[in-house]
Image (cartoon, rainbow over all chains, first blue to last red; front, side, top):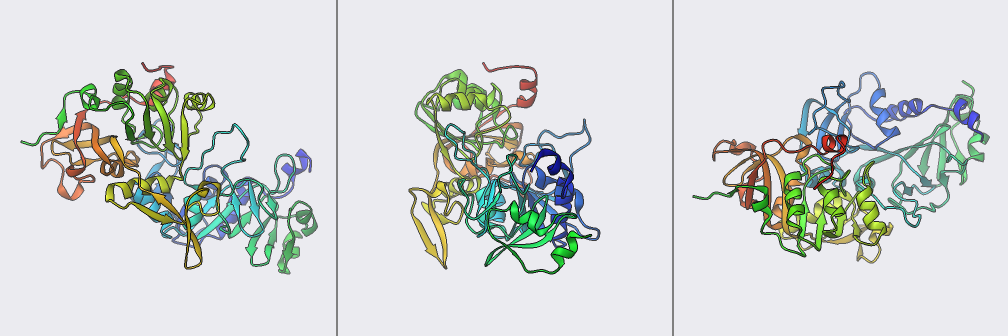
Length: 229
Length: 236
């Protein structure tokens, strides 16, 4: 896939985030990973309220502050300034990961290097020699949060599939991913592997299949319909 | 009269000897006890094992402690940042060892250390390279990794308000590792922006009870890492 195609076909990052937000129920406690997942907060569907958790110790996180009104003691897990919403609370790290590992958070949205057909996730290390390994809270999130959603481009910059039969990068967790939202489609991890449940406008099933590194199950008649909208 | 206050950061850290294991609070720069760290650099104590979520920024605070060659080993979850050159250089040169621990496991190991729980099984990292060499046990069909408590000789923590008994409150997300680190060290050393008389903190609002705190020093206006870095400063 050439660079031009990747920009003009499929969903933008904002559209991917908006699509993922559609699948998060009202009242959910949500942790958004650093990067594209943070965009989800801009697309909360009408009539729903989410409560955002940031693992450094805050529930009820609000949007970025106006320039000049940043509070140096108030940051998110990406170490960027944030604000508080009414009803917010602070807590220490053991309590924060009690929320995560103890199954109290409903949804987390993470980025990915690779996702396997069994729902394995690799998103912390390429395993390259000389790289400084860094994991943060990713392994705790996938181990404990009830529903793990992944937002990622469908293929790498080099055009290699990120949705694969087996992850070649070191794992973050095994069998942990529920759904993947890419620039091309929405894919569910089912007992039989990747299951295509929706394609972006103008994207055909074959187009997705050619760019996916494992068999793609297409069981919903709505898929082809959606691609024609 | 019980009075845990100490006159200066230098005196507060003077009890720290070579080879110590030290828990240092902070998530990035927020909650980092920078004056205590700088006093430890001035003191020159070597062969330290440091536990922190990260590995510092720029050439001040924790990064400067690593850069000064006083740290033998880092135990942390995320040793990368936009500006963590001093750790990266020391690590690549083989001057500092790294034990990488998932963030929640790091927190729980410290909590367990403070609570007298010798080890625990956690689902975090099961099936990943970070479980390698560790005992894995299956409960109810799921794998759990055995993790050991993490105790230390000292902890260095920043709080907002303290009283002379050692009761503490924190400031916003500056709380992070502070309360659990206070519990898991033989000697806990705290820098506070404000020191009040006993009773000056509502007992309902005490976050860390004084039993977990040994030495308190007031630093009313702590340095800000981000500002020092923006000014191109390095320590010492």
